[in-house]
Image 1 (tube, rainbow, N blue to C red):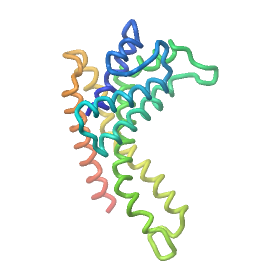
Image 2 (cartoon, helix red, strand yellow):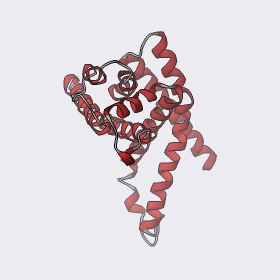
Image 3 (cartoon, rainbow, N blue to C red):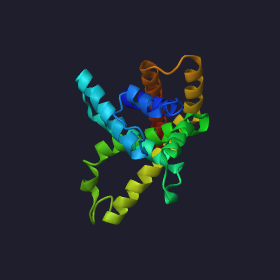
Image 4 (cartoon, helix red, strand yellow):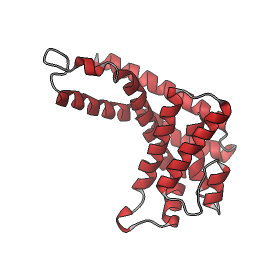
Length: 207
């Protein structure tokens, strides 16, 4: 999964002497003083470029692309004092901070929570509107919205299982060998397997 590999590399790029050049080496079309939004946009474009090269676009890949950009904005943005504006150094520091065990755990958990929510929503969105009405599961639009909000919480709680080990994996793998695309892809598959089993467990418990 190229999107997840880029998530592992962008924080590391922020620790290089020339952040912008390091980002461009990853395939992001970035100016000399990128903002968080610039980096998220460059991330999305880089994933698009990868898809064009391999000529294989999937719905899942597009969801991962969107969730990766959203996670970068959300998690890096939390570390910025946007009330008084941000400098290029502030942006770089915010992304460099994501290389710690704790912060990368938060980033990966946010990404996988968003992606889990989007995958479930992809299937549910076709069926849920059929269950809104006086004699249906959801009597009102408000009840439908409450279900959607509960699903958001459910996905974030489920994704915590990824946060429990992703930061340690990231730190250890990067220290020992660096994180190649294949390693990131393998990790993403393991993470989704854990999420799938956690969803099944929660279904059995609350059924």
